[in-house]
Image (cartoon, rainbow, N blue to C red; front, side, top):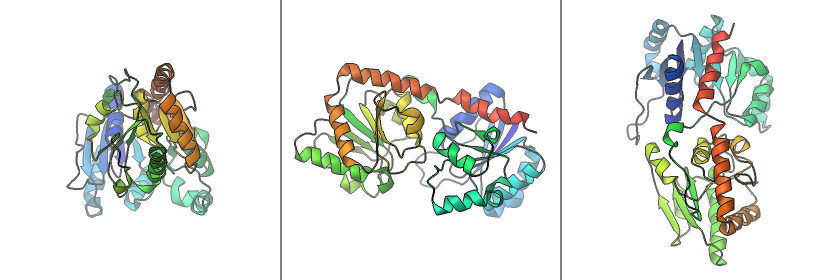
Length: 345
């Protein structure tokens, strides 16, 4: 089956999903993506069964000819912001092909979302037949947009399991590890404020490893137990998650967060917020980690103190439970989801 993928910024984990599907079902992918910046630290290139091409509006005639020659049987479009992608999607939907859009927005009840739900036909459903979401927070929004349950696929995002199959927690390390952009919506300012409070009251008895860069780097507390690594290539991250302690993602809003899946696959207990989409499927409070309201710094402080006092037995139970929950989202399921579209009519 030939599958056309119209993407914006292609990710390594999406490449892993397509790779697994090609391995299992011999599906062939033609992918158009927004070209990465010239100073991108890593590149994603074509490989067996997956041809990756750069998109630009100036090349639309050439792109349409290439797509026509490819003769896709399924079309995937990553959202509805690119008007050229929407035109291609609408064309193939009119021909009776299954056309699926990805969506990771949670339903927040904003005015913009309410308008979108009222005018869904003009914005979305006249271009596509299906919608593909990561999990529960997005499923509710998809229903609001008028998609029937049989036209909603789940499990849109999946970490590259192959990178984490040998990663585990063999030591009880009392450390917090954060991976992501150091920006406001990640909740790092609130985290750093709580850490500063613990340092001031002589209660900070953990290590903290911040991996990532961003405009709020200057707020990282200065302490002998706090380490900052500005950038790590994706293939180097798994080793840093081995014997890394407890993963923390304190986001004020996180549509999903594949990094939470990566942490779970690594067997890390996880601290995250109720506002983090991936937390709905991958974190059960007091089972494999802790969840709190992103604006509640008192609860965050209480959780950090719990981690400080946590026994090794409780830590390793949470570690095993994270592995269990992480295995529920997998590349085989991703492949199965996209192959259900073969039977669409």
